[in-house]
Image 1 (cartoon, rainbow, N blue to C red):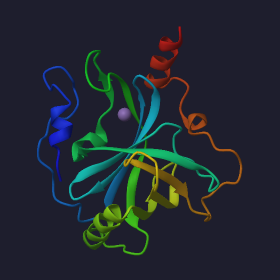
Image 2: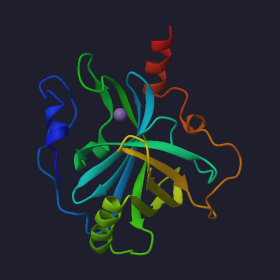
Image 3: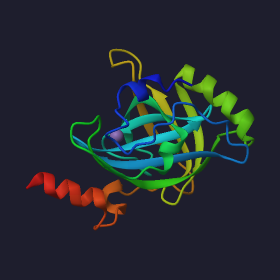
Length: 196
Ligand code: MN
């Protein structure tokens, strides 16, 4: 529930990112998710799941995949406010995460076996603590079952893996999320500028 870290890292006089300190109530109709494509010091994807009125967040360097053989590293980062889910735009130089953000996919999601969002939210918080989350995504690009599993052993404590389950939405061809991004997207433009 804490947006303290989020707030600490940002100067809202200088960044257009949402400045809300509080969180909203759990969505009663359906929990929401968003994936933002973010050209900061490195291009990455931010995977965010609504839980307890905020967005639990993971940075996924290689982007999500619909191929169950891919285990995509997902570094858990600070909670973001619910309103961040609709944020797109430029974070000015000198600010945390400076660069360009665009929404790559969004939609609703459910706990894998609990359809009710309020009950699902409760279980998801337990699953989060236990380091194993199983969900069903209903996005435009990402659909079906996914798992987020915390890595054990010698890894940094915030290391998780994002894995597609084998279902009707899975693919067994190579999957690169960059192939599903419009060529003229603002983030792609920013990334090209950076290469020059
Ligand atoms: Mn980011």
